[in-house]
Image (cartoon, rainbow, N blue to C red; front, top):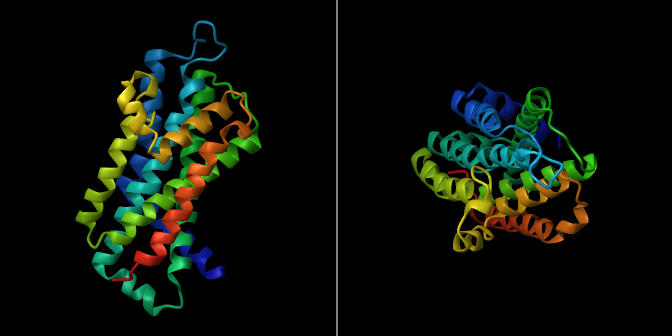
Length: 246
């Protein structure tokens, strides 16, 4: 466990030193919140007691989780593999399980930083209101991070080069970004695309976080929890079968 924690801390430092990863995980979702918040404001919707920022902060959190768990995880591990860094890990007393757990720990830490930035901006600039249970909201966030990272383990285990990792990651990232309610509200999508989006774990993540944010109990989202838990389990299973140091 101590080796896993040390590796997690190292990965976190490297993550924060990478300009593109830092920007798209921490800054880009914040800029989107500021942009759309300046357009729509946070005045309550007709026949509702919450505004745009109140309702869609969970979508911006979803972008943070998606970027960390799919793009950065896949490209980062693929880059390690291409440069031969993973071979050095194989020579060290570190198992693939410890390595992947360290990656997930770094993802959780970076995602938490992104969420904190969003919450500060939402509260200070748009007077955002939170109506849910804090422990349930944290549980939903934690499960969402783990589920999306579990999905990211699959392409991260397959990609042999940074270029192939980028292609695979983007093929997952952009459909989920635009169809899961992260960049665009799902209410704007045609019925067919709404049905397609149900296949994405991020759709269930954002729906659960949004509902809890607005005051629903987490027990109403057992389907979403089951989908994210199954995604994590399947991702871990396939990573165990597919992951290679070289």
